[in-house]
Picture: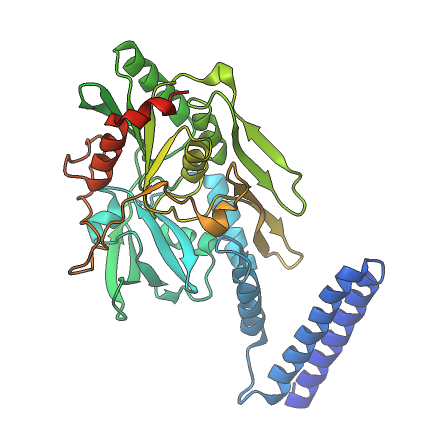
Length: 408
């Protein structure tokens, strides 16, 4: 087919596309006319690309790029899966868990970013750190890659390797890193005393069953006469939103935990339940930029309802709900359809969860500065180091006279 014929096909396709779009929007409200105007602009741009670009473009790549850009402009977790990627996604869903690299991903600055790295997991062993930008995964640029695509690329068979190029804070040159995939064992609650009268609990994840494990630990501490608590949610970035809500109910006898709402998702309020409370003594919550998702819901509830201070740094901001929408061509949209909100009505995605008492840590790449140095990473089951500045600040707050006002 010559160039003129190809151009004619594209123009005809645009006309048909707009005709169908017009038929759809004529039955809609005035607001939907904006969508129709957007379709006409898209069609015009598509025609100019086909007719005026320096070389004959691959229209499939152009369309895929446009879809990626469109969804990326919404929020980091929305994305587009091509027919091949969606087929792979469905196959992986059916086949169950695979070997992983131990990272939680999102998107910032147009690239995939590492939200958190599982302590002593495959990615940390390889040198990957929270805050690293992944320029490429498996040789593919992440510039037009959704979070779902990136996650699939990092999964694989045990013992296989994932090749990534990471850009560190303060650097512009990507560093090649090879990660050996492993089956990630189930993560458990870490709990012990840090002082005679103060319990410490760290939640590495909020997967199914963690709330039950947390409840048992809290009951044990209460029976032993330990009546101060530090709840560490730093690096907790994976798990079910429902688990975060259930965990909040263990601490709150009154107040609102969170609100889930979207354009097509009716407002859903989650409130405290007095009969679920097992810990009524003073407490503090530790957060960091690698706290995200379900852990943000929990932290926001504790801080928002004045149950305890949120100590540390602002969380990442990703507590939201996604749905997968299959498309006629075999592809799919991963679309965020609702945001979670703090008790005072702020979007967690837009704002994160701000600490009530900030302790800002220096990035590992900084040579000097006013921020305090971060503690070394903790192994699974390991208690925090006593020179941990965020932990020490929480201990100071618990030992102050104001802590008595935080009891439920």
